Image (cartoon, rainbow, N blue to C red; front, side):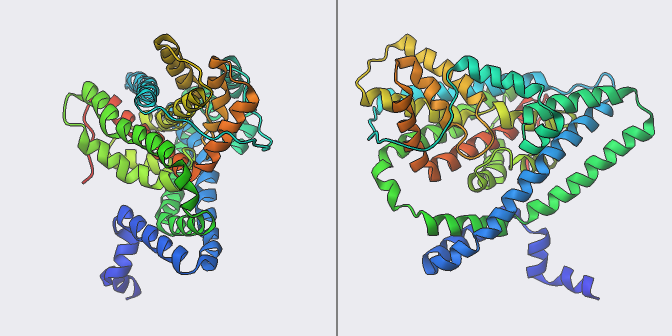
Length: 410
C-alpha cells in the first residue's frame, strides 16, 4: 500500500523520478532565497553542500579505478574504444580556447590592481616541471593515487590491472563487472542528492561572500566569462560539427544542462566525474570509451583553465606595459594549453599555473603570485564557469568522438 501510494503521489514521484535538472534549479532558487532571507541559516545549511561534494569526491576515484579495470578486463577483442578521436578533440579544444582568450585580450585589453598576496602557495617553476609532475603522477603508489584522487595514476594502474585480468577466469571478470555495477548504483543515489547539495552550496556561498566584492573586477570577469561562453557556444559546436557533420547544438545544450549545471556549483571536475558517466550512459555511449575518456578529460581537457591562464597572464602583461607580438601570443597559447592539462581537478587548480605562463614575459614569481591572488578574489564565478565548461566538454567530445551519433536526451 505504501509503495503504491508513493508512486501515485505527484510530489514523491517528482522527487524520486523527476527531472534532475528541474530539481537542481529549484534547489538553486531556494538557496538564493534563503541566503538573502536568513544568512545565518544559509551558512548552516552549507553542511549539506559539503556532504554532497565530499561524497562525490570520495566515490569518484574508486569508481574510475573499478570501471576502467572492469572495462578493459571484459573488453571483447576487435571492439573499438574510439579513444583516439576523443583525445584529439580534447587537445584541439583546449588549444582553441587559449587562442580565443588571446584574441579577446587583444580586443579588450585589461589591467589589474596588483596587491601583495601573502598566501603560502607553491606553483611550478616552469612547463618542464608541469610535465615532470604529470609523468610522476603516472607511477604514483596506487593506494596513494586513490586517496589523493590522482586520476592520471588511477588510470595508469587501472589499465594495468585490466590488461592483467584479460587472461583471468570468467568468474574473476564477472566479479569486476559486478563491482562496477554496484559502485554505479551507489553513484546514482549520490547524484539524486544533487538538488539538496546545490541548495546548501549556493546558500552558504552567497551568505559568506556575496557578489558585491566582484564589482571592482567586473570587466575582468566579463572577458573571462565571455571567452568561456564563446568557447562553449561557438568553438566547441564548430569542433563537434567538424567531427559529426550534423547540427551539434542539441548535444551541446544537453551537456551544458545536465553536466555543466552541477559542475558550476561543485567547482570540481573530479567531483563531476560520476555525473558525466551517468550522462554518457544516458546518451547511449560505449562504456569501454567513456569509462576511460571521462576521467582522462577531467585531467587534460581544460579549455576553461586555458582561458583563465591566458586572460590573467595578458592582464598582468598589460598592467606592466610589456609588449606582446604575434609569435609570443601564439607561444602563450601553446604554454597555456600545456599548463591547463596540468591543472588539478579541484577548485582553483588552474590559478597556480599562471606563474608558468607569466614567466614567458619575464614577470617575476612575486608579481605572478599577486595575479594568482586576483584570481582567487574572482574565483567565486570564474572557477565555477571554468569547471562547468571543462566538465561539460568532457561529455561533449566523448560523444562526438564516437562514430555513431548518440541518442540525445530531450
